[in-house]
Length: 373
Image 1 (cartoon, rainbow, N blue to C red):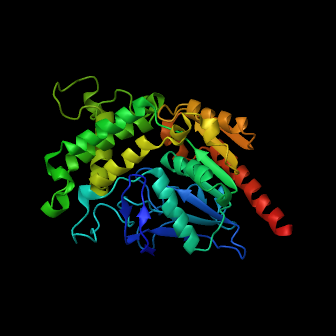
Image 2: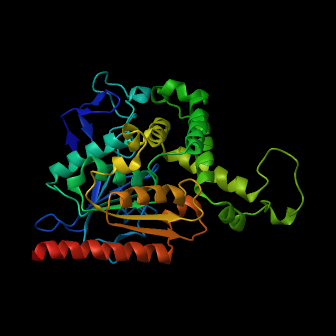
């Protein structure tokens, strides 16, 4: 969808003539009351569920969550996935042409924030004629967007679903993000962000950035169970090569993830999105008081966290829950004992899936009650 009207950004800049890539699943009902917006995390996109025809291995990033008969059931709900501005999956981003110069934006693409993305998403909803979502949902960075929706557009969503997320990053999280960014910025092929014109890609920087990030998505127990201290060659178990190559299975796995990531993700996009993570702190304008920040919200809330998620720990979700309770909001909270770390929000844990399914049963009942009234 094309937007000609400039979008003012928090940074003071604005975007002109931009595109938003989106996908929809299910059918929008007559009164448009069954729409659910799913917000994506760092390296995901608008492609939430299903596969593209003739493209094996094109499964959507939350396919286990969204679809016919699944927890977010597209036989009931009209689900929308939107690719955020600055991304590299179709929406206007650093690799697209800057209308002012005719050349790729590169590092000149303006800094975007979670709040900027929410404003852009609201514009797309306007064009679709959706004045209020049945729910806005997201995990991790997507959960930040869902929370921002409840604050910025309190009348435009009836339910807010926040999975494995936080109201602000810890210093440790910001530190991890900066190490990843420095890996990209220090790659000679980055070329100040204008690597497109030179026909190169800062793959080494992207590899390291992904390796750093991926470590934070897994728990210590999960890594120990999957890899332990296994050497790559089982025949050499216990026999080290005493070099700086890939000896351990965990090293091989991380390098594989880094190599794969560097083939499809854009370096400037990685910088932009991790900065958006860092900047998100809606309570900052209220002196750090999250309860005051959430006092204008009107939605019902569902939050879930995972015990081994040390990136966005359960304590961060509990802070949001406490602030909502202070405001007498209706909130459901689940803390799930799962071994998979932060990535658990993407995985098939029956307890987690059943809780989300049960909550969307309530959302569906609310729609039917509204229709009956």
